[in-house]
Image 1 (cartoon, rainbow, N blue to C red):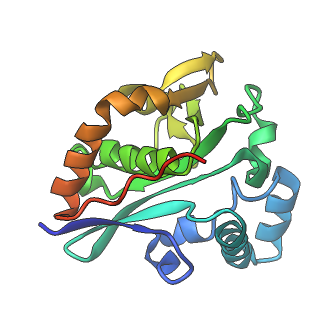
Image 2 (cartoon, one colour; image 1 turned 90 degrees about the vertical axis):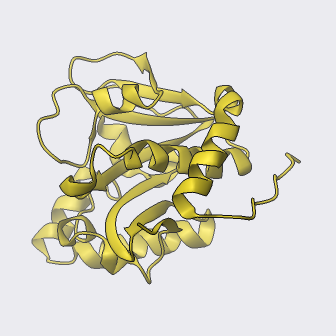
Length: 205
């Protein structure tokens, strides 16, 4: 199987599931999000948000392809770009962290380690960009696919709880502590992507 993780852009946004392309749960505050749905323009708001983040901050997601078929995606951004995060009881996200918004895989591709590789890919990207951590709000009562990731899944891929809550704990993955498994991440990515050349390491300024 040919597998690759590609940066999310407006060009491959249509490869996300339709319900995700028209979801602005994280991108807008609750009031603005409800208004966008009522006026029938959530997809335009989603495109505008991704465009703004790409221009001002850079890559904010990855799309997973297996044999050129899109099977999943992951999205992340600094908390300043995520209005919904302030509505959570365990907010705010730490200023030194980037927020992991959401991720999704087609059911037939779950349980194959792709979820872990997606998180590792995000970690590698953010280490190279000089960030210290990834944080996410987890759902401790998760029962079906939704915008908020299951807390158990986040814990399973290395996150630790930094602010407990019976429903929406805030979890954190320290990127500096991942330096020890960075080589494993590189090897996993090389196997996953079939890469021969490694990207040059970026030195912090």
